[in-house]
Image (tube, rainbow, N blue to C red):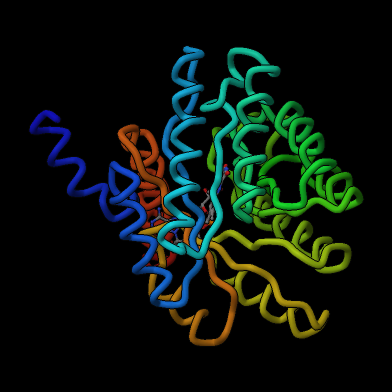
Length: 282
Ligand SMILES: Cc1cc2nc3c(=O)[nH]c(=O)nc-3n(C[C@H](O)[C@H](O)[C@H](O)COP(=O)(O)OP(=O)(O)OC[C@H]3O[C@@H](n4cnc5c(N)ncnc54)[C@H](O)[C@@H]3O)c2cc1C
């Protein structure tokens, strides 16, 4: 690792669980000891080399085995383009299926992350295929996309499990909502639909107003949801939720490909600070 990479890694440690499986499992054990469940993701996306997709699949198999050995309380999350979706759908499905089969035998839940809007159809198609065969699968849906209400309706109608996020990928006029107000309104709409029509789903956000609303709805609907946050963001709030007896998951990525992920979190942090500054200065 170069000096620049080493220095960056020290900074990025806030958001990632290290480079190796043993690094990440040590971090996860510690989170488990504080009452938090984990969702572990092996970093990597947009692979165009079949060998790399196979190697990632193998990595997830090792990860599942080690999670079981160390009795880690948690799930895993996969990026479709790490498993070959940019190359072809069949390759992605075959890698996804291998991981889900292995995870099912070890009673570990597998989430499909959601990436760029162009990949949504194939991601949902693969998810619904696996859902027919396994119960241990969930999928991420982004409130930023205008189509998401329909997708949630279709997925919950088939008994699927949703992890609701706002969406981290670039906006596109006509396809995504373009401003925070509309994305938040859509998030609220999707959340209310889930409370009405689903018994098991995840509210994945660091936004106080969304979390407060979800907690109010838990009382109204007499349902308990799973809350999820990214490692290194709003850690105190996560622990507060645990002490309030909420079900909390921390998403912990790990691996050599930490630069792009950390850059995305840094950009969000800058964006949040800008909003805060504009509120303070009126
Ligand atoms: C468990 C989990 C899984 C995710 N999976 C996916 C996925 O598969 N696909 C996808 O597109 N997106 C995913 N995301 C990312 C998500 O889409 C958002 O980009 C991210 O969560 C920020 O949105 P927010 O809901 O926290 O709300 P925002 O409105 O962005 O932020 C709300 C508040 O949270 C705090 N905050 C947010 N981000 C930061 C930060 N980086 N540093 C410090 N404070 C911050 C600030 O206080 C901010 O005011 C996931 C998020 C979580 C929590």
